[in-house]
Amino acid sequence: MKPNKYLILLLVTVAAYVLFEYYRPKPLDWTPTYQNDDKIPFGTQALYEMLPDIMQQPTVRLVRLPVYNFLTDTTLPTPSNFVFISQQFRADPNDLKQLLAYVARGNNVLITAYDLPDTLEASLGFNAEEKRPAYADSTLRHYFVNPQLRKPGGYKFFHDDGRNFLTIKDARAITVLGRNARSEPVFIKIQYGRGQFLIHNLPLAFTNYYILDPKTSDYAVKALAYLPAGPTYWDEYQKQGRFDEEQQSIFRYIWSQPALNWAYYIVVFGLILFAFFAGKRTQRVIPVIETPRNTSLDFVKTIGRLYFQQGQHDNLARKKVLYFLANLRDRYGLNTNSLDSEFTGLLAHKSGISHEEADELVRLLNQAQQRVWLSEQDLLTLNAAIEKFNQTA
Image (cartoon, rainbow, N blue to C red; front, side):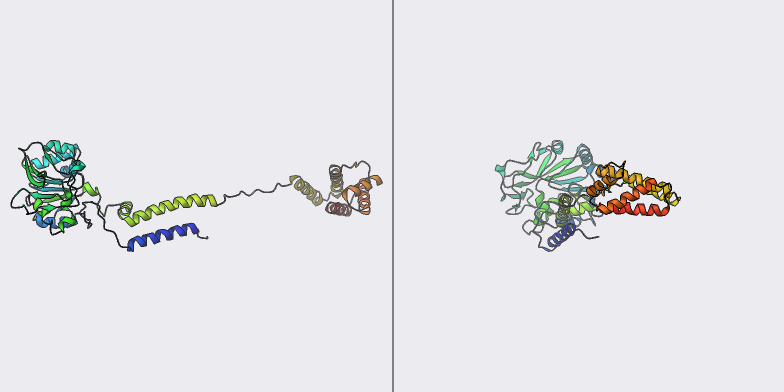
């Protein structure tokens, strides 16, 4: 089968695009993913790899379940730590109920995110709404309140616009651990039951870019120092969902790779174009229509063969004469009651045969009508004359 040129062109285009995307220099991705396996500036792989040493543990357990599922299905040691680093911290009422109970038992939770749920804020007595653009200041510096952690000149995270800070509703239950240059709280500790919440609303400070920058590399370590050394759990469900790399479907992997993602869309769009244009260019199948068959002629031939095979030459010859005369009446409008010289002249004139041929044909017809018995030879002679007339008339 001949290959379709449009399909070949589509496959070549996709392959060329994938190779181009794979080998061309990759632009730096500044997307803030906060994912523990991302090496991009705003991933958190560097901190995740450092965390076991910071928490003095052989390993830090990765959590890919909702808070409710993890805390209800897993028996955790007390005290232990739960770390959340994301752009937005999400918790439904069931998640929040389990998280509060987990801390009340004597455990610790660190949450650093720009957007925090209202239910958590109401339960712990603070507010973290995004402030007006007038507060924006990318040169704003941040300081730890503790003199032993405070750094002269503070820390500047210039990828943050400085609009986010915390508002404290109940100062008696909340300890401020860090402020910005406007003295607005950005890092607080909330005692809850026998445990504590550490709320921080500058997650960029925990990303690769600022962990590897010597000017800000110790900020995240100092913030994590407020968690006691012990078993620690790192949440990735907020950023990557339930499935790890081994559990991801082929489409999840394709969508996670920019080159494959674009190649996928090119294939889908190309197939749509192919179906549209190829469908219009390809002629639809034309059904084969058989020419109408002359069943009357087949019937006559069948009857003729039957008479001939049974030796009924006389009967067949007379029927052939009758059929031929009927054909002359229909075709030329001749009166066949009297086969005389006048009939012969009209037959020659209307059929276009010579007068001699017409005279011979009429003679044979008269002879067939007048004889008592017609032999096989008479039938053959008469049939030859009629066939000759049909071919030349």
